[in-house]
Length: 320
Ligand SMILES: [Zn+2]
Image 1: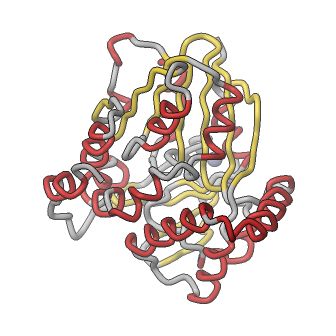
Image 2: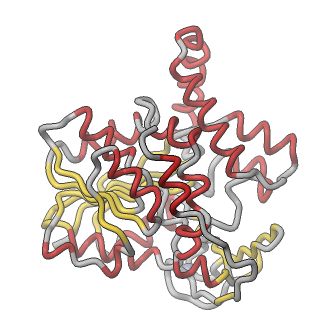
């Protein structure tokens, strides 16, 4: 792991212990009539009376500004377990396959790129086909991305002009659930894409089997997730600027369901999260796991067909 330890130390900071709260309008339609839905410790979820999305309201000011991720994210995003699984060949398998089928070459911007693993894999597999750029608010993971040869820009994408550079595709892998104004991010993607360019968005699916079985006990109902999209509400948000050219449901983790059911919704530490990710990735690489993998593949396929898998992905084409 090149430089991971020094990068982590450089960015360790004190975290504000008490955040003030800010109120939000609906992140999809802008309405102000959210009704209480779930409460989980400090997290208040409301349901929009107009479009039906579930979202966190109010939220700590550090979450609204994104500052949280430069303070706390370092410990998780640069943990050796997380880095090892992110950079494993199998980690972005589904994302790469899907991405490749809609964007076979060109200039790619990955927003919220973290340690740069998606772009690293993209260029490793098809070095001649892509020019890549990662962007994130969290400095330490970007230092790591650079140490692996992934070019990056630091800061908030909403404030970045890219010196007029336009992209063939923009990707958001598990980003829009974390930001207070997801619509602004899609507008920005629209403005930096070439005509006909493709935007790929992956978010957790609020209609997944895991959420249906576990409700608020699911570990991904937690303070870092501000927006709880499903296929319908994500399309609502995206259709303002984009044509939806594909919808997919992907990923299924029965171990998470089993653990969260057993533990009844306790907080799962970042260390545990990273360790589980590493274990899951290791299982995928073992040859004796082939029969289990086959059964798992069938289950994941069936859930995806029913819209019950863990994530929903939209492939969007920029309207001119
Ligand atoms: Zn709404």
